[in-house]
Length: 496
Image (cartoon, rainbow, N blue to C red; front, side, top):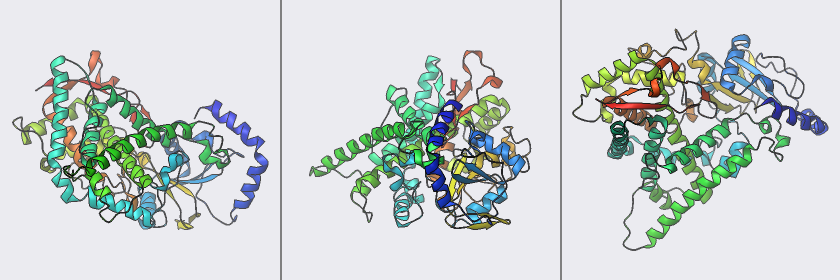
């Protein structure tokens, strides 16, 4: 947040200080609690000024001084930041149950999304019911295997789009192309139809909508630090994200209404997709708000993380021609040019897998993993009090010099002959979280990211437009729930 906005809000807080002071007295904890160390906090604002516009980076720097388990005061909110493999394992594995809840930002409460979202609900019976829909209706190995043909078709449409750009000598917006592919895969799985087309205005509009939601949810918000300001919404975050959710809900409502109308027709065949499974209930009794939230989770998180990872991977490969040559040589040797890459091929492409792991190490989809203490927990002699907000800095762990040699360099070879994966078992690499709140979409993301990236590299050579040198690729990011490239990556394909 900018300093002008922060200063204006602090002025308002000072006016309201008597009320804030009473609340602080009501919630004051015992002085005997030994919190982890942290920077000295100022009255009222605490350590807010230390966050900056990229909290993952600011918190990583602070951890170098105060340690891998660090306490900050963000306004009224006590926050513990975790920045090492060992401490992440304590939170996400050893004390997983005590930290199974997530801290809920005010932005997520827009349109009451948090009340029905599998991402944000506490680990209660409703959360288990919704998570079961993902694990039994969408993401079982059997269903994923059954949809291989659909994913193959969508990736071939991506290849055809790239080929048309190749013939025209036109640069491809990598992130948008990957986003359209992933989104249409999801809409076919859920609604049995494509939602957007490659290169269309609607594709860019929908991508902008999803990116806006992710950035608003991740944006530092004064309301989260001073809940008394929630009625003011000083930064306008809730207002903007409510409008975004209304657009999504409008789309879902239209699709549901069309399906219900079609099902009333006696000659209408069942689509046998996720929407039919939900409407048939199949043991799940969902209200409209739960259906909207479930679909929003699928569409926003599912489409954004996979496409963003593919874009970062292509950017890193274009900046590192040696790595680009190696991964394309592997594809030529193992697959060749006579047939497209298929999902069973992924296990035979170790360098491609190493490229994806290295991309996720440097650019984790979720840079800060939010949790909340459900009880007082003692860790290494310190106490994390009940209701404390906990942030696991996956971005910092991926760049920890105590774990990784040359931590800021893109070097896929570090993962060859190495059993570290990103599925939540190895805490050196946790881009999708770990424990019971590990990302439910991980199995699908694994298949889609490798398949899209391999297909883009198998049949096309790539160069940067307008004489841009590899070292000139802009690798700055926009902070949010996910990290997007600040400047979309565009590259020109050449047919092999």
